[in-house]
Length: 409
Ligand code: ADP
Ligand code: MG
Image 1: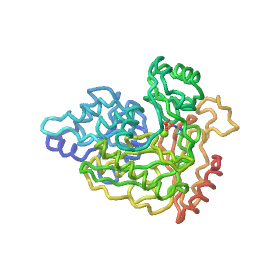
Image 2: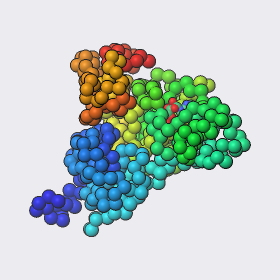
Image 3: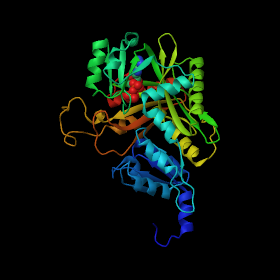
Image 4: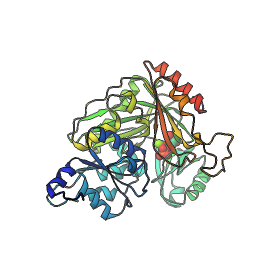
């Protein structure tokens, strides 16, 4: 509490403060966007030196499942969101009822129910089906019994994915036959899984929509995504390989999903385009998404601005892309060039990439998340290249990748 602040001051401050569960880079960029418009921000995150915590006005250092921390957050802000999907949905549910004396409970967006749906691959697929959005053929594998169920062969070759907690390609195994499924199920710890038919992908893309409490829904242009080792590597907008009709269909699917979920806030839906042109939804993220980072530099309104506007009940207007953009993810691997042994201790040999060489390129903007330790596979930052034409953005992005030692695409 600020010294001398009375209840009126506190209520006024709360009405100008937005909160987030999670202290990662998504939270950090959301904090920046909210602060630019004069909002105070508060982060609940157990790590005392997190990317978002370092940027926010206030940082509650506590576990995500600590009810006293929920009460603290609810007391300090008028609206709450999450920046990662594995936040305890109970926390969101509880905060939506925690009204400090004389004030309303914070507006929670997205709601716990929508986050719960996105946290479980089977519930997520059920939501796709309910919204009439095509997805990969699949079935639950949750016990030995399920390994011998009829119809398993139709899903092979497939991918066995843990139902919860998977990300960046972690928690999944490619499987060729029934024996493989059994082995993979055991290797994944016998936890509830989903077996999906492996589909012939031509490309991957994503759609980001933002929906307000009044049901108004806007979107970013579709994004074409290239993954390496299960982690997003490159996003291109406009999407060079996506026909306009496919883009329209994906946007319609994402908007319908948001409506069916009664969703409030920013939602990302990942899609596959198959080799025969068919569009299939893969998964959803109930938050801003790595594939939307380019919008900070290529659009008049970014995904992070959309998130605070949706939370604060401010108007959502369609973002306008003013520049073609290419985003390159910057993983910790860049600090460990090939001549440094992979086993070397962090700090011993890690070296900062030569940022000056890429920032000398026109239209290149560097975003670093303030993470101290550059581990392999860890998202340390991203580089966005904007230009007057998609071709120019591509050319500069390829030059940037080359200067950083990233593979070509
Ligand atoms: P994560 O939560 O780790 O991002 P995804 O379900 O998105 O998990 O899978 C990671 C990647 O694996 C996808 O981006 C895609 O390249 C590939 N993949 C996932 N499911 C399928 C599938 N059914 N068929 C073919 N490739 C798939
Ligand atoms: Mg994915």
